[in-house]
Image 1 (tube, rainbow, N blue to C red):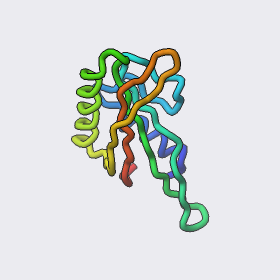
Image 2: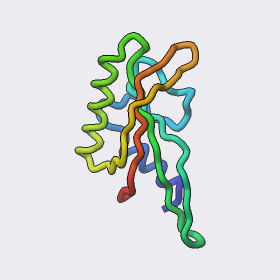
Image 3: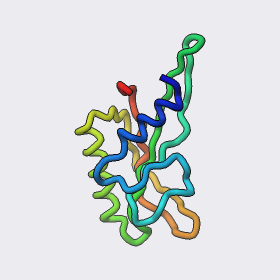
Length: 116
């Protein structure tokens, strides 16, 4: 499967019940919505024609004034991903700075190999 095809499958798999927006464009992150921002992957290749991608996604939620609820929303998405078989290697609390809106709650999630 090509890297582009992996991205398409990943977008579909990460779109769970509580995710409002899924994107790979940071300008589409919206305050007040649970958004998954898929970051450009690290790509390795052991041999010609075969590439592996390491994917990282940022889950953002809430507004600068609703971070308590945002934390619960993000944990709900992580639970949904785990229940659906998404291989989460690591999830680290972070902050997502959104121009003109302030900082949003965020988790940086490193995804392990998946059966895409």
